[in-house]
Length: 247
Figure 1 (cartoon, rainbow, N blue to C red):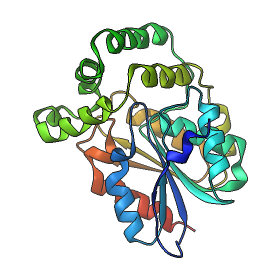
Figure 2: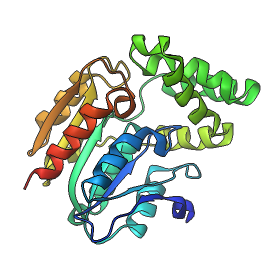
Figure 3: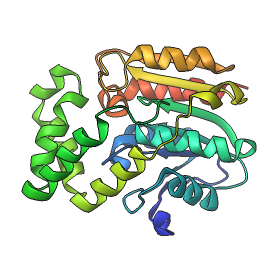
């Protein structure tokens, strides 16, 4: 499982810090493009792992830990947030600060395997374009559906994946632990961020997480659904800058 070597690095000389930005289900570095470019300009080294070839959150976490320096900042979006929680559960001593965006802590819900299998079957039968057409609309703010350029970028991203990649990542999510009991033990600064219109991982879910974490700050991004780093790129970048400035 060393394919994490495909990690995308935004490199700088003598970086102020190393920041890992973890992508979500069917996502790649394009989701974090605005944040990566801005934080690199600020003097940070940004690394975005490639999770296409993993089928467990533990394997994703272990791969990041094997590649990362002794101390690093860590932020994850959606499935990437789940990986981030697994990383800090395993090695809290190595995570300088934690960002969790449009994500959750609960384990698999009743009926979830069956619903996800429907989409896997669609991807296998009709391809990734058909999956994108079904899967993406509920993920974004309704106004974004009328933006062909924006939706085209998201569709292109999904089309870079395959049914096998999708099935493996779904397997990882269906075997996720309930991370809720560990929230109170997180000792580093935490930024929780969520789109106001995120129907998949709603603001109330993030408020409950913030209430459970000692050093947590909740950021809500207006006019944004589940894909906040792309839907509200400036707001998310500014939130990450504030998070990085916390002592």
